[in-house]
Amino acid sequence: MRILRLLDAVSVWTARLFALLVVPMTLVLVYEVVARKFFLRPTLWAGDTSYMLYGTFFMLGAAYTLHRKGHIRTDFLYRLWSPRGQGLVDALLYLLFFFPAIGLFLWAGWGFAYTSWAQGEHSVTSAWRPPIYPFKMVIPVTAVLLLLQGVSELGKSLYAVVRGEWP
Image 1 (cartoon, rainbow, N blue to C red):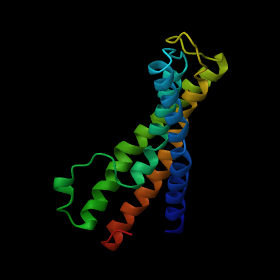
Image 2 (cartoon, one colour):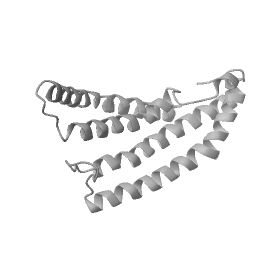
Image 3 (cartoon, rainbow, N blue to C red):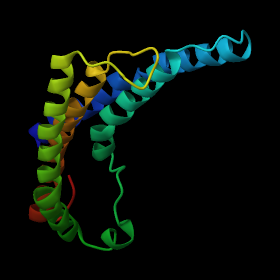
């Protein structure tokens, strides 16, 4: 249980840290609105910056969302089952689907990010052409955080199977 609490703490701590990305994202959007509406001087960079910050914020919050049980689930059936039944189904689904999918996500995401860093990739869809390799590094980081939280969730599921209650 101590390890599970530590893994949960990693998700909570990183979510709090990454939540701070809302501040620069808001400032960028406010700057763009003021520049565009009041000074008729739209920026080249604000749209790219805001979508990269939002994408980063969204992706890096996935492990915390998993910790808080915020991802989609068929609760109308699930809530009727005993904790043992819930834990068994959760454990099987983590082993059969979650971990293989996250493993592929990590493997593909790492290759994607590595290639982008090696090439010093810049956006081709923007006149500003910002570097996007740091943004692409978010993919494997997200996969690692999801993997860690998945281990915690699997542990909690096995606890429910054995003890008949959720930790």
